[in-house]
Length: 160
Image 1: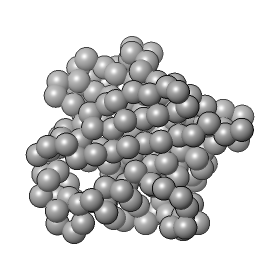
Image 2: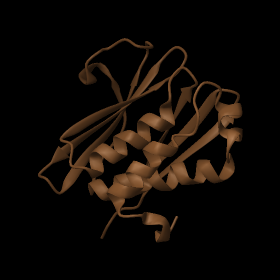
Image 3: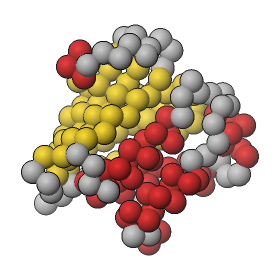
Image 4: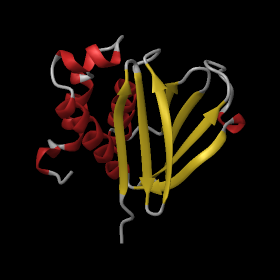
């Protein structure tokens, strides 16, 4: 039985986003500011995971903290996903210095598909220039999402 993974990424205000990550009965909510391209980095990270990269670290900048997704291959067929919190922005601290908010193991394609679904929902809610107008510094990660779609084999028919 596969435990459902859901990633809900929402633009919540001018230059702010909230992301709820649910795995089974566990969840955490993290935030990101316009200081970085959080959604773009998450989508590229998911494409890397779907491509078989051994490990990837994805940062969400907050003011003043940082959230970090650490995705590491375990045994080839699964990835370990850890969502960590750090008090300082751009601290470059090792992962071990972060506070664990959520940790789980899943199929790499389940992770990549959950990111694809989250990004697709954002694209639908904020089409065209509306995303950049709301987010501020970065345009919607169209090319990164196309790369992720290619790695997933065009999941447009996937439920979500």
